[in-house]
Length: 264
Image 1 (cartoon, one colour):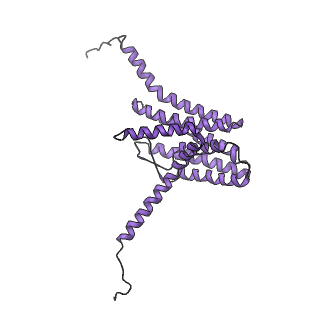
Image 2 (cartoon, rainbow, N blue to C red):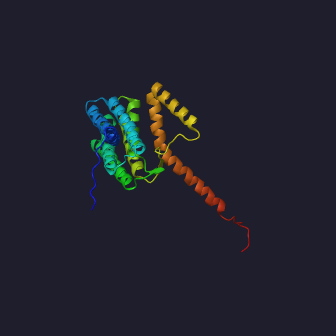
Image 3 (tube, rainbow, N blue to C red):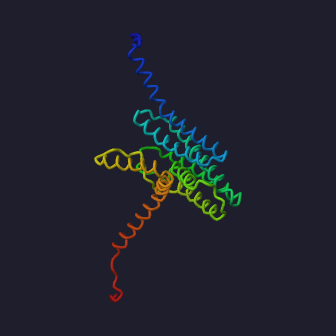
């Protein structure tokens, strides 16, 4: 057989290869930053800095949204990155928010009820991620609420109220809210995916909305973040209820009219 001589690598090709390797690990760097934010949120919670813990979870949401976009833009998606991202999400949006919720608002109820609700949130988040990994792909909708949204809702509530809950009644309401978030994660309710959000024909409107949101977050961060988080949580059940009522109306319109005085 004819031997093939290895062509020596030119000096101009070496920077390109290094750049390609750097681009390949760039999404993983964002994922590592996500893990760091989750770890910092746990440490801050143990020290009683609940506002910093909530802010760290918010930064983790930004990093989590960026690593996937950068991986798709640079065509560097991989199974390793998918698994690493899932592990990061378990830490930053499953464990960290549940610990934050327990120490901030679940200690003034029955102790077993408090940690059971916090653990239920964590295990439902892990199950949600496992189901997402099985169904991974270019999804237009999420089946069940994404775990970053659930963790972000807890962080937004803590950041909004600030002081820990001392009233047992409010703590009981918070327990119900944690259980509701856990249920929404493992439910079959569809939530809109922002992965396919692009600048299309109405790009000027999209840019305007983003600019307004940034301005509102800068001026009124507590109210804006809480409204965004709760709005996304409610959006899934609201859309499902809308489609249910619409389907019920269509079914009733198709039913034949029956005259009770008609002779048979």
